[in-house]
Length: 154
Image (cartoon, rainbow, N blue to C red; front, top):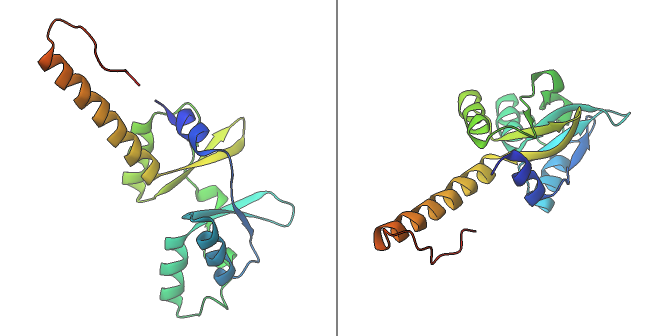
């Protein structure tokens, strides 16, 4: 399984906010859609950055300003600083990027457009699923060393 499979499984819905959106309104969108990150767009609809729940929490806390007074553009990661993945990347590459850069969400690019976002939860679920499949196959091999497959390989 690769990143394209994860994006297909999740769908290509991206939630966005404008740079001028108040942080409190961004939190409401995150909560409403049960997501951890929003893409930030400028007035023309071009990607300007990305903002996560952690960006809002830590940067608002450090500034001492209330959520009702902070705008997304002062809290977001600017577009030139975003780490992105490609649709044909491997889950291992995405996990390495997340661990080394201390990030939890990576926008996925195909033909210069963002088509989805992969989260650390998506990758952990993939690892768990693959571990279960491998475990099941090993148990079958131990029980049946002659290679007669009695399990579905899904």
